[in-house]
Image (cartoon, rainbow, N blue to C red; front, side):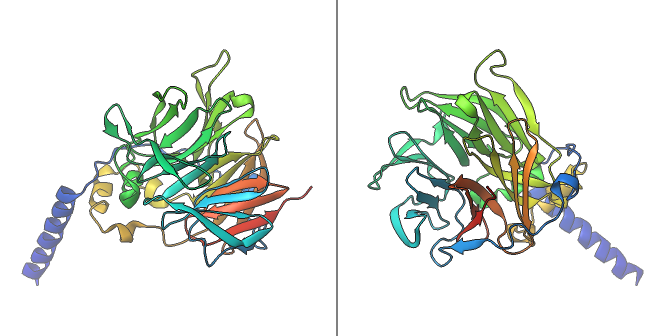
Length: 353
């Protein structure tokens, strides 16, 4: 019996050493911020449980949403399709083009072109008739692995996130296990073609939203469950501060309603695998060698937060099951339009006047 136990122990040790050696990640130790939990301003509620879902059969995992002034909804789907429909006729979905990648962020420029953050193809421009061109997919000769989200300034400049310099869409779970914080924010000038990196060392740089008068930029740092504020103008130009932290969930795409509210889709409640293992990089390295499907979330939750200009929570909408893994919240005509990484269709929720 003792021999058998010895063999079993030896076998386990060999397996662990092998997993450690073949692991594609090189984790670092880090310290998560405190978690406010689903209490007080984030108290559990059912506000999203009565949403209506549009285009469920056609719109597979609509990651982000933008709506034109005349009520045309644009979104990108899991199969690479870029589509549009009118808010009044959501059953009439029309295909703009297929990027051949995975469109994540969508915004309109002043000429009516759709600017697209595609995790595989790069930062794209798509004309109203579907002509697609690549604005950029590299920086200083290095491929940008994971262009995730963006916003377009009044002068045409595009501010966009590259979630990770280490991992791409196919293995982004590894970025959360590694915690090496290699995400960045860039500014691309449409007038000169110049690209400048303005923020670095972000733990999965994600949603981007410009504030009033393009004076500052909000950035969702998903891995740390917080939102940062980067000043673009004024005496604080170039300074980064914390806009909202200790969030009980992980922020994804951001949007500004031009009337004092920033909306954040919260893609997931904070993940114990990311945070409780923060002091144990060796263990996370072993876990990184396991099949990615074993590491992916198995439970989902629906959560949207609204913030005022000072970072104070002004809205807290939740649901355990009606529409989950919310990646985007976009306000139009006193309604909130929601996108998701996991649910199909776009959810619509009327806002109180």
